[in-house]
Length: 487
Image 1 (cartoon, rainbow, N blue to C red):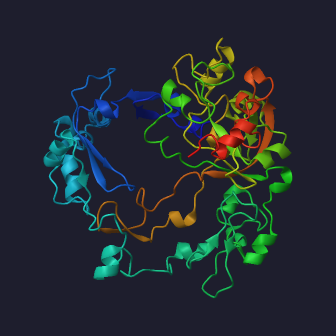
Image 2: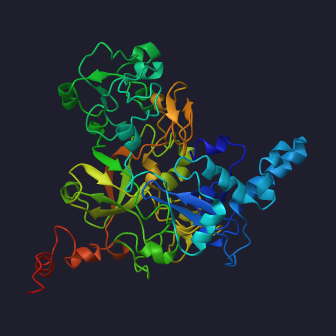
Image 3: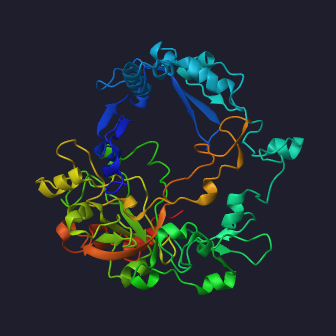
């Protein structure tokens, strides 16, 4: 994206209330209100709890000269209306202009299966008193499919029944018209992306040769349509094509529950709490900030690679594509230095052998943050021009991920239920039936870069103190055994 796609874009515009990596690569950035600065009401909900959260307009003074995010769309639309003479650009945001955003919010409520019947002004008043509103899901806790199971109401499918066969041509071509197992797109020790199923007359996927691909070509692009079927035994006897090149560890980048939507890595204080490497004093000037990202590795895997707990390591993915296509072009050496992933290694016995994990919430390195890291006397990875603060010295978790376009996520024929409602649709729908972006997985190779001790000398201090897995001191072992307390 950064090195091969954005340079082809004529304009990138972004709005945010914190200077993120996306802002670093934008041509225009609009500063907008944070949640606690909203001067217009808003609302949100989550699939992990049964409440509707209302944001009332707040009297809190703005920290900076920001605007509501929807006014950035209004402002651009006004200018487009002037240029084109078409007022529909501006009329689209009519109630934003008139400061009646509650009209739009009430429309959402009126057409929502779990909110219909509520009045927004009533909910806003409750919110001012600290009282949330329950979603009307018929059961508490919510039980998916309750009405279909207990009241025989139709399911949101073409037939109204639970469907375990997909007649759409795209599913038939992909070999996914019956429930089958498909190996992960990359993070597997076996042949990636193959269909695992016994022979069946209904399973007749189009083969690579039908698309003009070599069946043995396992590169990323043809792999997305490489509909090869294997039995379980055949799969277990297969090997990922990249294992023999040293890329023999699965690298997952899942979401950290309190590190995405609550943005706890934006400030120095919150960054220091993110993981075991936080130090408000930054005694080790190699640290990108008061905290930094790390990868969890099984201790036995790390020791085979002569990586100690707390060491800095290089993490590389498939060199055909990662960290970006064309990285080995001498003219892109500077871009490669920014993109190649470096992070701390953390011993973590809770992960299986061969499987590693890095949370995806850290702000990635950018040319500006690398410049700051390499030129500032204190070594902080902060862009001297924008003050963007990275949590990596180099690279980021996306150094090992690429876009994955699954054909059965792109059909024009699948019937679905639209967001918030019981209305059925067909084909594309954002967040319902569409591509989901990059998978949070890759096969990786790990290489020690620097010792974990301060300034690159010796071991990371918690290891020296006997506080880490596999290096526990006698006192630590007594603590873990509960021997510090007698009852």
